Image 1 (cartoon, rainbow, N blue to C red):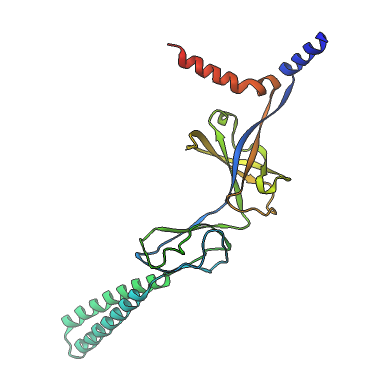
Image 2: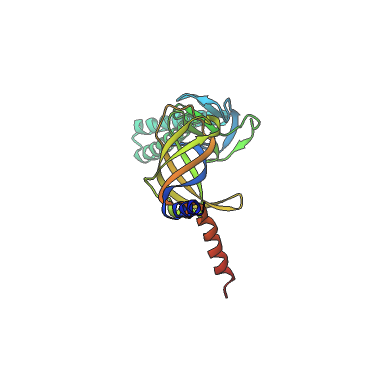
Length: 262
């Protein structure tokens, strides 16, 4: 019996096992495109909201363009008036007046082009086939929106990445190129492989300091949706079973001793 215990202890200290770093994981779109307000205006329509699947060119929201239509008509009228004065001055050989009128024609055309550009952007459309990740303006119809305000975020339906929230005590063992596996709550019966592509900056989450670790999935045929969560495990090499089971405790003890020492 004693020999068996000794053998077991020797195995724990001298045999190596696979060390894996566990972290909470969330699925995100590989590309997330923002749809923002192109100019100051008022929201007229917003037929979609978060969770809707949209097609390229589909209208996401429409801004009220009545003031722009009036402004376009005003600049069209002014351009016509200045053009008439320009032609009249040419007919009378009044070069100075013709130059002034021509400059006014060019100014009116510039303002008209600006209004036309705004009118073309009053309909905010989906840049590609995808799913609306964020944005619900259905209760804000008629309200003002500022230029550059984020209205929607859209992610593609067939390109995803995994974000692993690795705690700072484990980040030293994580680097780009490592492989791992992921199990999502919505696909609990299936393990999906991934490869770490980038280790980003730290951020605070639920009172903990975590690092955003980006990873690429090995498969693209899964029925995923942005926001799905699960647990990912990153393969971080081999270590002795004793180290794997006790390293967090020993790290904590070393930190506490360092804190207590004068």
